[in-house]
Length: 109
Image (cartoon, rainbow, N blue to C red):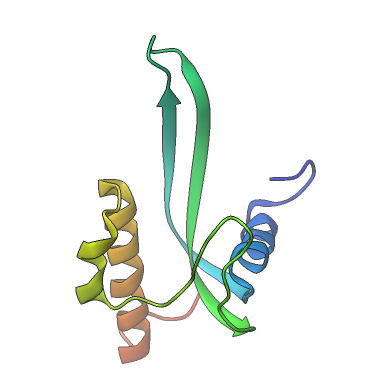
């Protein structure tokens, strides 16, 4: 996040920078800590991940400078990605919420 930037604004900016997509953040799916330690168990990095279910407004999916490729995955294809357990859980939660919204089970907030 940038100084003075709201969390939802950061989500929009990060999505655009990392994927080429303009998104509208909706439901908060979760907040997660990712702590990386060195060989002496000292904290090297502490990331706080804030995950929103987002709706694509515009743009085409493209890989940013820090990624070799970008593509969409189906639920069945997720197992090949070797995602961290909490990451997989939030992705599955997002897919479930999106499906519920499309079927009319949830109101759009």
